[in-house]
Image (tube, rainbow, N blue to C red; front, side):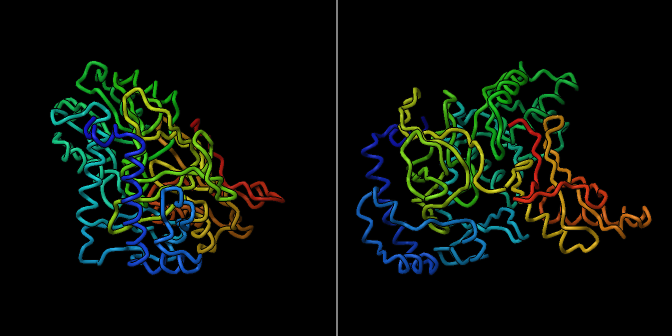
Length: 431
């Protein structure tokens, strides 16, 4: 363990630490974020009413719409001059959800990721290849700073450029690979095509996240690369990668409870559920200065388990995410909402508001095809005009989503109608 005095502390000590940090966070939110002060007053709640961790359930939920409604900086609890970095994730209407970090927040995040890499068996002697995207996405920079904090050597290659990834992996003797699991599998297959033996290379572990993946996929990656493949979880609103991480026991992801308080709730009623129950994950941040969140509803479905792990860590573990309570898709690590595509189509004018998203995984990389009905007039128009509409839609959807999609214009009334909720997505991936 990188921090045995924390990762192995008794549950009683941990709860005491969590409560101390929770009270500071509650006061910070109340005093510095008008949104939270208004919520408290609306509920007849004062910070002093939170007298124990059991009173967490009295606090208001925060949902993604609250971030959109307060775009860009309305939920920040620190003055702008103290915010040293902002990150953002894609939103449903083209406006991203924005998060901020003070220098202390960045330091805490680096410590968290260093801890995660240590859970994968990493230390200062390792070479960490970061294949997550850099930029507004939290993945690349989050892992990068953590690897540096650990004292490891970092290869900041970002995503894509597969031949170069494989070349540097060999030339620089990479020991730990960090990227999406689908890209790891793609890398392993490309390596085989190029006659590169990853099983007998210096690679020993992979830290994979940002998209759902199955146990079968884990086994395939491990067999192809000769590594231990570990699951990491995070979301930009709460911090970024590093909210939870698997240890080498591979029996659930340890939630970093000295930074985040996890809950499982009934997604319908909002009631807290006991350990071992399947429900919606909720997180409260208890160290963040710039962007603290109270009871953030992730929309991710999982289970929390309190049994002590064989590794000796006492943090609760969460199962891999089993689904979502909303219609968000994760494609190549990017959050995609059908409503984003719908808004592009409605603004276009040349197509009907009837569409179908077909998500598939080919050669272990996610693909997105958008089937769109055209009007009777447009369908009988010349081919060149249809090609122009396809090209325009492809460009606009890529601009909104941040990923490319194949556009297929189809005849009027060919997309199935429904008397109830319309079927907008066919996900062929075996997750």
